Length: 93
Image 1 (cartoon, rainbow, N blue to C red):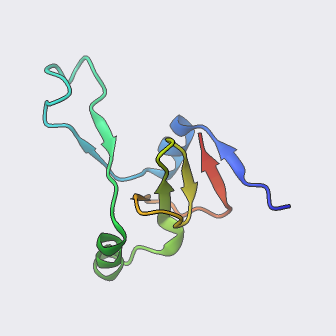
Image 2 (cartoon, helix red, strand yellow):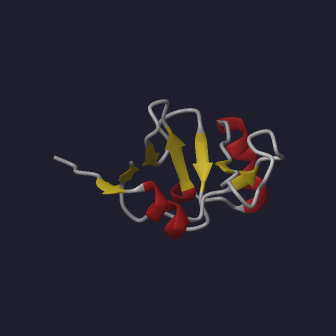
């Protein structure tokens, strides 16, 4: 049985540095009072362009699932890219 490593979101975000974007103010009006960072997701076609332009490797890609989970590798259409590649299969909760 292949058991995936589990990691909490805050640790994953700090360790792997996913691409994020800051909200332009639609979510809040005082950026000093809230956390307006959101994960930047890509579709498979956009990922291919990133791989060609920036040399993104397969192990820097994660899948963002509809139930809020994030897993290493490509297993869906909402993809995340991190600076640090993963070394073992894992799920972020």
